[in-house]
Image 1 (cartoon, one colour):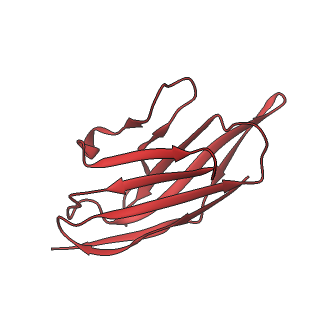
Image 2: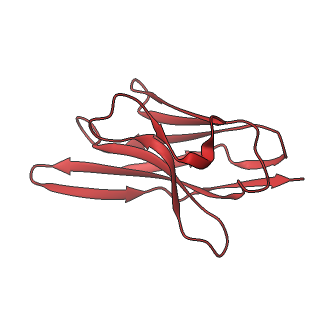
Length: 119
């Protein structure tokens, strides 16, 4: 499985960005696919995504209604629309997925895309 993120950049506080994660190299369905982020000096944290068995996307509390995650199955691409970006949001944002092949589950990460927010 390959995960390729795009869409990062620099915006002013209150601005918006749309991140994309294109998944390829697998057949069937991913167990889950989600967004993580890691700021300098901090641990990587889950932002939100689609977990196995869930009916729709779930979000971390800090998202507070500002981000919307969607999945386009025809393009095998996950999007995250980020609005009202604030100085707490700058980080490298990573796409993450789990895939089950027969009896084993594998975990994959994208290379990350940088998000910067200026005040």
